[in-house]
Amino acid sequence: MIWHIFFQPFIEYGFMRRALVVCLALSVSTTMLGVFLLLRRMSLMGDALSHAILPGVAVGYLISGMSLLAMNIGGFIAGIVVALVAGLVSRRTPLKEDASFAGLYLGSLALGVTLVSLRGSNVDLLHLLFGSILAVDNSAALFVAGVCALTLMLLALFYRGLVTEAFDTAWLQANKHWLPALLHGLFLALLVLNLVAGFQVLGTLMAVGLMMLPAVAARCWMRTLPGLLLMAGVSGVFCAWLGLSLSWAVSLPAGPSIVLTASGWFFISVLCGSRSRLRAHF
Image (cartoon, rainbow, N blue to C red):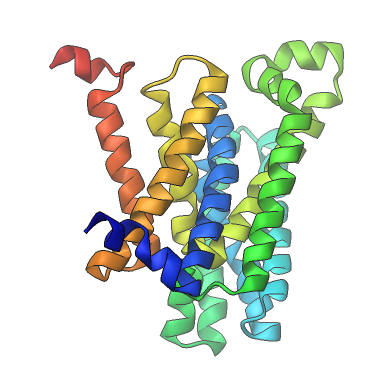
């Protein structure tokens, strides 16, 4: 029974193997970014940017149909534009950056849905919003793997700077005033790139679930940053594999099954985590 549910589908079917590889790569890179979002107290920014890329994806869809290249380029440009505009608004007005993102992403979501509706059907709209992980082809798998490799390489290269910028931006700005802006821009670019890679797999509405839920769950267990990063990555990989297996076993949508599995792990961590106050209370 265990073999039939958790191993046999990935051995016998190529589309399940591609879905597993893409989910594993995406879970490793996005959970690392989720940890840094958690440290910056910007956990909902991932959700805002995941909605913000939809107009660009929709424009790419209107121009080239279901072309992965056009939609990825459009989504990346839209995400970067929204991030830059939100930063500009927060510097020129009394609004904080999170408030700027809140105002922009709601309009972006409505605009994206409207653009897709001009040409597409409900099926196309659902594909963009919720993804189609079991329909991932080789080109999409290679793109996601490339994004994962690039993200991990840049995070390793700029690790100390990103950690310092997350904990003590004032000290970093006092020593090198140009460095915080550079690190923040690099981080936002990686965030948008991973969300663009994730929309093909989990859709613009679900991609952020795999990014944040394992990271938040790991916070209930680990005290150190290396342990937090390791725990988040392992949790993301486990939730992706378990969610895909359960979706195959009980005929559920694959993307929501993965996010529901990550949600279940989050609630377990909140109740039973070694750093959770609920555990001590009960």
